[in-house]
Length: 144
Image (cartoon, helix red, strand yellow):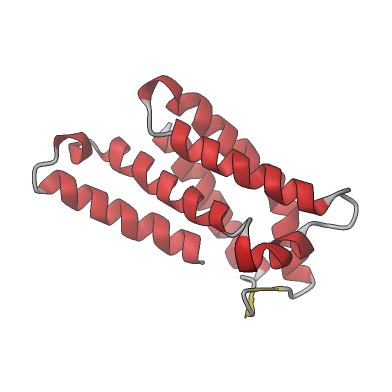
């Protein structure tokens, strides 16, 4: 849920910057690109540090080397967050991030069914998580 709130709040902040005259953010798509970048950088930060073991537990057992999967997806999130900010790469980054969201969804399903926690807090339920995931996919595609 924190990523969802980060997306919404940062979009509002960037739109506000556009309203007060920062020309780059006067176009809603630039505000959305920046908000998506914030969301993915925040998400990537959980792939390292104190929440890393929780993230590793989310990877379904059918996948080998969950520690590597978490590292690789974190790096891809950072790359996508950077790529979406530039006109030359935003389309490719948005498609890549959408594919990444789809590829990571089984971990969200597994975590919801097993009632896992991240940072001691229960993961979002499957229905809500599915709706949020669809919003994330729409946001990254619109941003690109």
